[in-house]
Image (cartoon, rainbow, N blue to C red; front, side, top):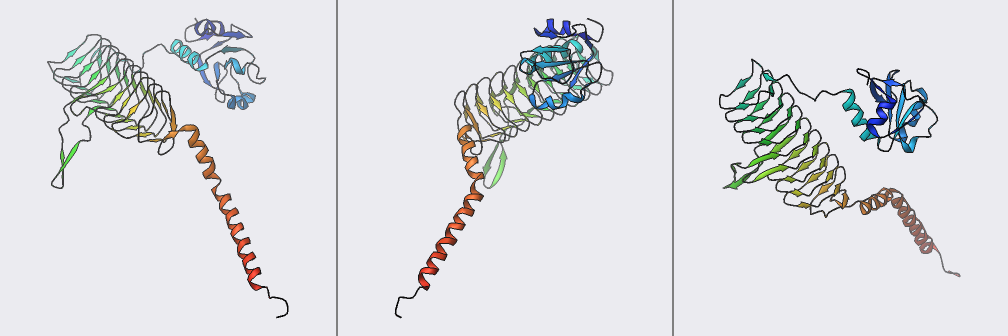
Length: 357
């Protein structure tokens, strides 16, 4: 591979794709069809963007097999079965550095408690604070101004981007990525109302983020009240997600932006929640369930079910209900016309005179 560049032949070997045209065509970056320049590989995974190919200046095109026959755009192409997977593989080759990783060592402006254990291969950035008894594993990276609380455990190759906070006792596994502004192990929203006053219930449980989880910016994950909050291995959380106390998110789950999960709810593996979905507490979401964007889930969802709407229900029945709802204005007009016709018919009958009078 040329330094900083890939040829289509090299890209095909890396992704299992096939080349149409010049396999020696080289590119240094990958960009959307509309933006791709002369030394770049244009990315086409969705038919709606075929319209942008007419003005595409890219050196070559990465496209799904299903779009192999599109006529416009670059003649030299890499065709793959799964363009998103291929995109990830090629980006890792073009940008091999680990995200957020710093040089090993502790920055002079960082404050590390003498009882903390920081692996020599780990990095602690400027202004970071590492509390008593904390443990930071091999090749982990703690960004600038992060706060790592007392007795926090950070696994190997985990990355904390700047300005993240891990409350005391939080546990992060290996290869976890936490983006800026996220707070992990926050006190849960637990109060008892006594004589008209809201009295805080101490939140003394834990918060565990398992291996290979990625958490977006400005997320908040509460610690358990007396048990554990758990984010299962391989799960991915978008920005602005809130997970309340004692929630268990199953392995391999996806939570899109602004999802909120209330306390003690549990999900099986492979659950996906669309943007702004909200789940009440103390419910069960089965393995592989799909929660639509902006859904309001107020009861259990079975394994593999697809729900949407508020209150959340079977997705197809929700779509049928919405289709009927959209017809209400026209139905209201039709009812109005029928009522007017009936009124006129009544007026005509009431106004007739009998013969001879």
